Amino acid sequence: MKEKRKEEKRLQKAEVHAALSIAGLAAALAAIAEENAKGKPELEHEQSPARKAALASAAAIVASQCALVAQSVGVTRGQVSNVISSALTRTSTNDILTLTATASTCTCVSHKLPPPKKKSPQKRWRS
Image 1 (cartoon, helix red, strand yellow):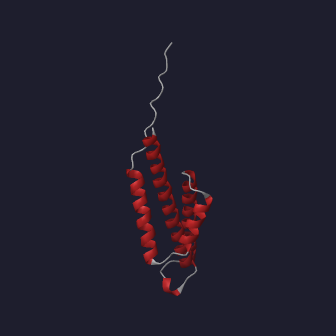
Image 2 (cartoon, rainbow, N blue to C red):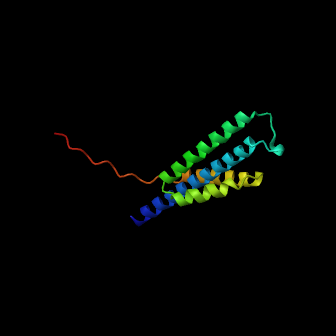
């Protein structure tokens, strides 16, 4: 019984960390898209301002949804807020690679952990 609770707690921690990592990655992508939308000279591409703004909006929605998913697996609002605030300032190539690697690793780990064992369904009596 104690081992089961320990395994469930470990799985939940992995899910929480994966959700936070993905929310952070999505927030960083939203920040990059916003930088692109502002038309900084070093970021000039062949994209129109409208396309850049749409990308920023889409990435912000993804970040928002990831935050909601994170909260649904037990992450507190404060944790989400901290991760997103941090990610919005981490937009260098190295930062994005680090966020991507962390999110990927956490996602892989949380999917490889065995799911908690479900209780066997109770037998129903036939009349």
